[in-house]
Length: 395
Image (cartoon, rainbow, N blue to C red):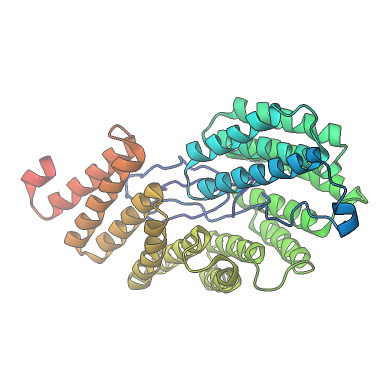
């Protein structure tokens, strides 16, 4: 899932695929000296998926018979906007941000051409503006992100929608968190959270998401006990709304696993990741990006435990899903992660093969001049040097 914290993927210096679906960048898309992908493990999503029932009402057949052409046009417009929204979300989830922006901007142009905007369309307008701001955030264009948050806030104010106003406050926090200003982000999240607690209009799901925002930030600040406490509040509220097998429950279990992992409590981390898989599979299916993310997180824990065969197994599971979804950047990082594991095992030929695969997909995802590719070439050179293959090392 994604939203305020979309998947910011990076490669850190521990040699491990770091899958935080929280969207906090750690040099997003970078492969560091050990060649390990860092896909931070927190995943969050408060974005809406629209279906035919999203704006349905309980009107009778008699009432329906009185619908005029203008209302029919509105319904057609809403259906078209929903399609664009869901197309954008699918591309966002798979890391295709330019394609997502294209869908969202197409929707905005359509909305701007409407003479009289209904309340339903205003709600969609708000959601498009928030999604666009989130993409600009992930592209490190903070000023553009804040520009669209401001536009979204104007729509929320016209709607007099308290929760949408709080969502804008959260979004400002998301930008600060993305920039690494976690204390400032925490202030935004605390303000929105307090407003929700004091509101008569706020529902349980929104409270759950608010706790999740706080938990993610405490995690980034290294305040693991506070992070776990807030994730437990998240889970308690979610279970009032959802069954045990629901994607949102899977997200929270994944996030708790990542806190336990960085806290050094690896058995607890693996238990949470397993619960995430069990909760998510019924809704996600086998080939969903979030399933891939959790498998990658499990691989990282096994790496820390020096269980290299298990790490390779989990990375392979994640890799097959990423290949199916054609997410070249994530494939690049997974191959780099596997190369690092093979290095630890001393199987240098396998490591070289994985680095070559990483380069192949890295060129597609990042282009020829990205600095991450230089680190991969360097890693390969070090292995060749160990093997006394000096000509290959120099090349």
